[in-house]
Image (cartoon, rainbow, N blue to C red):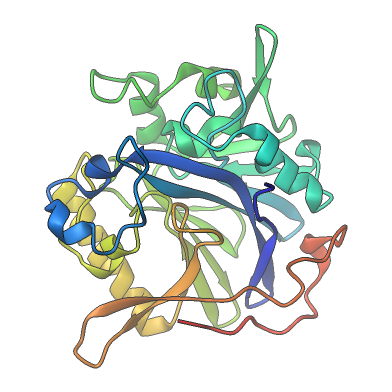
Length: 309
């Protein structure tokens, strides 16, 4: 069964597509950390026979100021990359790009919110024993502290900071200390907590903005409930404060929220209930999401998608 991909959205004058690298399975207890199972199992999808939760691998493809930008690269396709993910024959990030008529050579900028293996796997590809950058003409944008931590892993992090995803791109990096404008519409912004160097991507155009969360949460309940901090966060109290601040800003502004690990396509808005609680609301794609061979990067003539609960 082919994975869904290509759902399109717009923020002001910037239209983007959600490109899918499939589904990633991860231990549910690790995802929800210290939250008791009796609480999180009410909102979690069914677990598999290994007590794993399905996570989306939602990446973004957009064009801004003449640059074709890919945000996040999923779990990858090298030997071992897909051991915990849906098989390549069901579709990957590269087949998702190809369905939009986009080749790896056309990508100008790759943005990694952080360098855990399920977010940067397609940074590189294998040709036999040779590892090469998947996107040969791209600059890779990464937080400098994140790069330092990823290339000097410790006992906890060495299982997810993998040299095969990093070494081949070492000579084509843009390392950011703090906020970095990729264009005047696409801003790479620190959002520490999951890792010290974890970042988000803010898209601003006209009076509208949205944010790609990276790994700020792995389940939407963690966005709605501030104390529900993932067991994967290395700075949990910092993570809690980062989420609280950003989600409140998104609610106040009605910002679009792009969620890597949510069920595809993982796009919505944070709202507030009459009782004052945060609540995630899905946002439907633009109506032309299934058009084949259409150049997503140059089409701006369609109306906004409509929200649904």
